Length: 470
Image 1 (cartoon, rainbow, N blue to C red):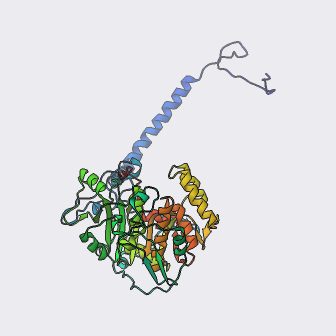
Image 2 (image 1 turned 60 degrees about the vertical axis):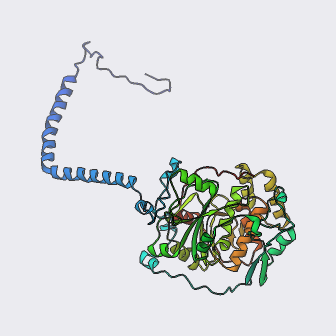
């Protein structure tokens, strides 16, 4: 019979009559007999198999149960957890609290390395020295600057009479920053044997007050790992992965304001009598100079050479991250091995400052008006749209900054801070400009994003910082 498609269709039924008109006999009884026969054959085979291999089956089941229980224990207690929960002798508590974002909770106290594929081979992003060599690592002896810049002088005024707090309401400059004119800004980029530059701490009445005891502590530091939390915004994550040698020789310093101090005390995380919370020495800052807490945070982030005047090296870590590597090992891998004086992470999403400006406005990180003012000035100064300056990627992600304190890097950080104060607090916008203008600073290590991920566990911001009340 032809079907609709033009093909032949044949139907077969067990009930069709044969040539004599009688129904065909069914074969269901035969099928049942065949099934019983197969079952009768399989049963003794199965019994013989179990008798012969029962020991092997029991061992396989036991091994599977052991692996399952081991994976459960690993999930409950991550690497480095015991170290992070160790109290410092003399009090101070743990300095940790439950992270409120479930998506980031799994990152806390992780020590597993970050890897990437290079030339078809998977390798670690941050290649640290073996533990035995890290324990014996020495800090290089300070050498005289070999660059064109020998000395940086910081402008200050003990009793300024030309700048008042009324002016601070109309501009972002204040008694802490000094009032940098456009002519002074232009002159600060001209590298000579000696450079005079605004670099915060302009006046005794400018704020950011630190106790004498804490100042003595900061002056004693030769290598520093620093973070800050102002306005009660973030918790304090204990550093992990360091050697005993680094614990003795590195200053782990957290800058808090009184709002953060009160917020942490309410959570039960009180500063011990020795000034520590876990491994962090807490320095409480009073009389912050800016209403914008993001600007206040730029002071310890960019002006570490002013806060640690005798330090040779420093590592900055944003408060949203947990530092998880040996600091001396990081200095060796990122600075000393590559003969660099400043290391910072490349931006993971964009390369152009102009593209970043669009993203900043779109994400409401700054107003379109203030971003336009900044980019208009940069365009007037001749900033190109290139995605690479001096052979380096133009855009940086500045949550981790590793640097040697040299006259040139200190100048770089001062200039960067001044741009952040003058324009927007989004330091990604001003970094490419300063890098472009300060062409003599060439030995910068722009490390890839995967290296930054190996340095820190990213936890994200816990809560919004409370602004200062005027």
